[in-house]
Image 1: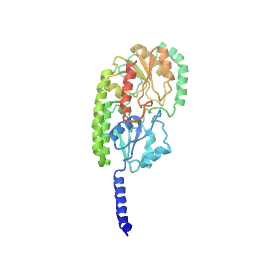
Image 2: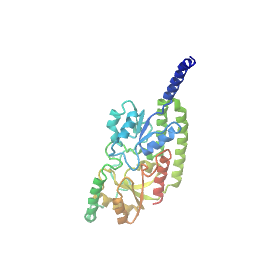
Image 3: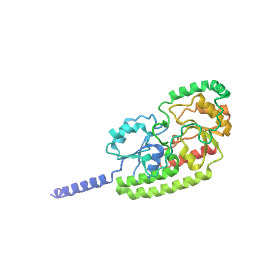
Image 4: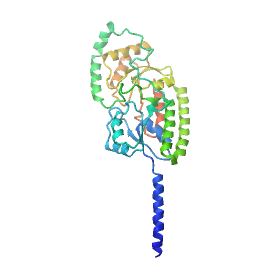
Length: 335
C-alpha cells in the first residue's frame, strides 16, 4: 500500500526530468569548413560543440559526403555555410536531408564585405608590362612545354582536391580571411543561435563579446607584425580579403581557377612579373601538389613558403581561426 502511493510520485518525477531534459537538449549545429566551425565553436562554448563536415586536409570543392555527414544534416537544427558555390556538395543535401533545418548562408548576410573574383592571374597594378608575346614568348613556350604537361597531369591528379572553382558565383567566397568579416559572422550567428535556442542566449551573447574582442586584438597584432615590404605570388587567388585588410603586396597567382591549372603562357607571365616586380617569395597550399610552385621557385631563384586558407594542419576548435590568420601573416613575414 505504501509502495502504491509512491508510484504516482515516481512517475511524476520521471516525467518532469524528461521534460526538462528535452528543454535542455543541445541544439544541433552543422558547419561546412574549419574556419567557420572555429568561430561557431567560440560562440557555443559551454553549450555544445558544432559538427564539422570538411575536416583535415580536405577542401570543399569536389568534396563527397559520407553517411556520417548525411546523418549530421538530417539531425541539424541549423546548417552554417559560406555559400555562392564554395560548398557545392551541400546544394542537394540541404534540400533533401535538412528540410527542417535553418540554412544559414554567410555570403547573404547583411554587412558582409564581398569582393568579386579577379579575372587575371596578374593583379591590378602589376599587369602593365606586356612584353610577353614578343620574341621571348617562343622561348618560354618551348621551355615551359614540360611544365604545361606537368600542370595537366596535376590537374588530373588533384581533381576533387582543390579549394574552389572560379565561376560558381559572382563573389570570391573566402570571406573569413578578412577578420572584419569574421566579426560579422560572429554577430549574425550569435543572433540566429539565440533565436533558435533562447535558453542559452545569454551564453551565446557573452561568448560573442569575448570573440569580438579577440578578433580586434588579432587585427591589431597582424597589422603590427605584417611584412608590407614582402612581394609574393600565391598558388591561387584566394587571399584578396586578407590582402586588402592588411595592405599586403600580393602580386599575382599561378591560377585564378584551381579547376584549370596554369599552362605555359601563364607560367611565362608569372616568371616575367617575378623578375619585373622583384618578388621575394612564391607560396603553395597544403591542399595542392606543390610541384609547379617548386618549379617556379627554382627557376626564378626565390623563396618558397606555404599559405593555408582553411587550416588543414590545425586542430579544429575555437582557437583555429586565430592561428589560421596569424600563420598567414607569419608565412608572408618569413618571405
